[in-house]
Length: 148
Image (cartoon, rainbow, N blue to C red):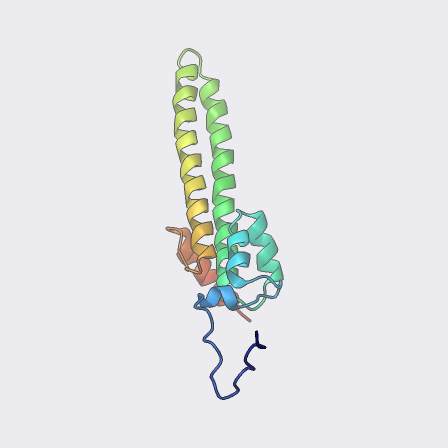
């Protein structure tokens, strides 16, 4: 049983493992770019935190701004939903039926918000820049205009 062969300096080093660029870049927070972007997708709070902390990585800043706008839209829907629920509930006679139907509509909208959030997190984690319809272009414009 002999000793292992010494490393031959004339041989080239093994090729690096194939990974998306977003996985290898490190952000201002010290996290890989894809992880930071995926965490930034948590509506409103994750977006605000990463938009403030991340100064250089445009991928993370885009997802953070998109999360802020998306979270505001979700929050605004909750306010409108509460007002509509209160108004419908105050109508004598048919108020209960209207509240029931509004609750079904609101549940479907909340489900759509949840699905969009999950898609954004998965896309960010895989290193793909994905625009949420209507919100993504606004976020992109905000980030490009705010880049130092």
